[in-house]
Length: 216
Image (cartoon, rainbow, N blue to C red; front, side):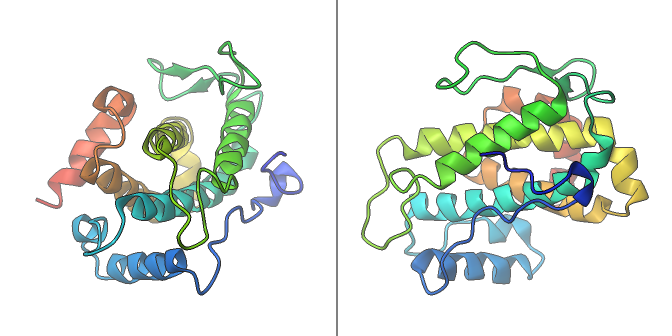
């Protein structure tokens, strides 16, 4: 199922993954939101005392998916087959899509097509109760961490594309503070738990260093 909602110009995406109210994961999400409000992002990403690491990573992965969904939704009209014929993050980095199931051999495609594939694939993982159990007492699978790492690695590519190819549009829309805060939260989180290989972060390395230095 495609994750885009309505026409590309609607600027909104269908809200993709709601964590059920009253569940423990919902309480964790509320905790994350409250600590984010303190302004200390390094502290906000730390595993809360007594909590399960897999569950904390699951809740935050869902949250980052929803954030990126919204951020990309604001600039879809600028990210077209014509303007972004390849999925890139600057002239040195180009991404080809494969999911290992439906598309086994990486294919070159436009950025909007790639991001549609990517977000639809992520949603399928988040909706899979065997991978992301929402019921209390249902254990996470042994391969959960590797799946979460792949999801986050791919979500990073959407941030990288927005920064490299669409930052002018983000500034015109006065969304840069929102984008920067979201990305900073994302980067501090993946750094805290070593979830994305440093080489994968290379397209935004300078920005990552700048965001980190402000917090030292």
